[in-house]
Length: 489
Ligand SMILES: Cc1cc2nc3c(=O)[nH]c(=O)nc-3n(C[C@H](O)[C@H](O)[C@H](O)COP(=O)(O)OP(=O)(O)OC[C@H]3O[C@@H](n4cnc5c(N)ncnc54)[C@H](O)[C@@H]3O)c2cc1C
Image (cartoon, rainbow, N blue to C red; front, side, top):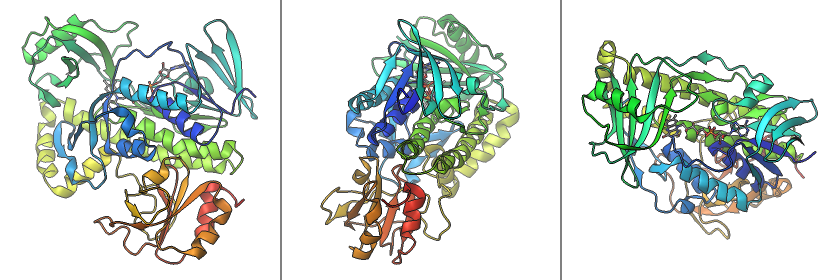
C-alpha cells in the first residue's frame, strides 16, 4: 500500500488529524484540492476547550499573542463564560486561516505528506484496503491505504462516494458574510435582532469589519459564484436603514442553515471527521472547534489500530463518543437559530430565556455546552467525578519530567499520573510504558471543585480525557489500560 492513512482535506479537521497521526508515527498523505490557502476565514477564534487541546500539544505559543474573552452569547443573548472552570478562556478574533496555517506548519514539521492541488475524485473500500482516485497537477493517479478519513468539509465527496447516510433538514434561508474595509460601524459582537432579521458586526485586524447579514425570507440558493457586495449592502439597508455601499469588500460569501449529521462516523475502512460528518448554522462559533476535537478523538485511536496495538473495536468508540457531541451541536445551533433569526412571534421566548440566563446554573450550562467543556464521554462505569471528563490542568511538583498534567500530553501518548508515588501501581503499568508515560509527581494545588480530592492516580487518554482514576485501589488499572491501549507488551 502507498501509505497507512489517507486524509482528504487540509482544513482544521484534516490538519489536526494528520498531526495526531504523525505524533504516533503513522504515515499520512493529506490530499487537498486547493493549490494554496485562500486566506478566507469563516471561523474567528476558538473555544476554551480548543485552547486546552492546543495547549495539550504545546501549540499555543505558535499563535503569538492570543487575545482572550470570557464574554459570549447563546442565540444573541449574552452569556458570561467566566463562570466556567478551566485554565483557559476562549480565543478572540484569530482568523481561521491563521489557525490552519499554524496547524499546517506543525504537521509539516512532523513529516506528513501534504499534497496541495490533489483532488480526490472517488473512493472505493475493497474490504482490505481503500483505493482513492486522485487528480494531481499532472495526471490522475490511484492511491491505496488501509484507512481513509474524509475531512473534506460540508459537501464531502468522501461522504457521498461511500454512501454515508446524512439525514437532517435542508437550508431554509441564505445569509451573507462580508469582510469590508472603509466602514465605521458600531460593533454588534453578539448580533442585533431586527424586525427583518439579524446583523452582526465585529472588528478584524487591518481595519476590516466582519459583517453577518441574515434577512428573513431570503430563499436558500446554491451559488456557483459568491454574492456581490451590492447584494449585501442592499440587504443591510433593508434591515438597518443604513447605507454601507461605499465599503470596499475584501471577501463576500454566503451560507445557510442546513442541519445534518451522518448516522455513522465509520463505514468499513472509511471514517469522517469535521464538517463532512455534521453541518449546521454557524451559531456560537462551534463548527471548527468541534471538527478539531473530532480529529483529536480519532487520531490516537486510528493510530493504535494502524500500528496493530489494538483491534478495530477501539474505532467504534470514536462514533460512540463523537456522534452524541455532534447531536448536541446540531440541537444547540438549531435552538440558537430559532432565538436569533425568528420573528416577533419568538420574542416572548427570547424574553423568558433572557430572564433564565441570568440564573448562574443556566448561564453555566449554556456556556459549558457552547465551549465544549461539558463533554463527558461514556468511558466506564465508576464513581469518580472525572471519569470521561477532560483532565483538569494540574501544576506538578516533584516530577522529573513534565511540569504539568497538560505538558505531560504534549507527545500525544497516554499518561498515567501517579500522584502518590506508588511502586505497585507503576509495576502494574509496566507492560504499557511503550504507549503510556508514567509520571510520578504531586499536584501543587488541587482543583477547587474537589474533583481530585483523595485521588491517588489518574489514567489520561491522549485526547486529554480521563479513562480511569483511583482513590487508592488500583487492581482494575490493567483492565483500563488494555481497553484503551491494547494488550500489555
Ligand atoms: C459564516 C461562518 C462563520 C463561521 N464561524 C465559525 C467560528 O467562529 N468558529 C467555529 O468554530 N466555526 C465557524 N464556522 C464553521 C467552520 O468554518 C467549519 O466548521 C470548519 O471549517 C470545518 O472544518 P473542516 O476541516 O471539517 O472542513 P473545511 O474547513 O471545509 O475543510 C475541508 C477541506 O477539504 C478540501 N476538499 C474538499 N473536497 C476535496 C476533495 N475532493 N479533494 C481534496 N480536498 C478536498 C477543501 O478544499 C478544504 O480545504 C463558520 C462557518 C461559517 C459558514
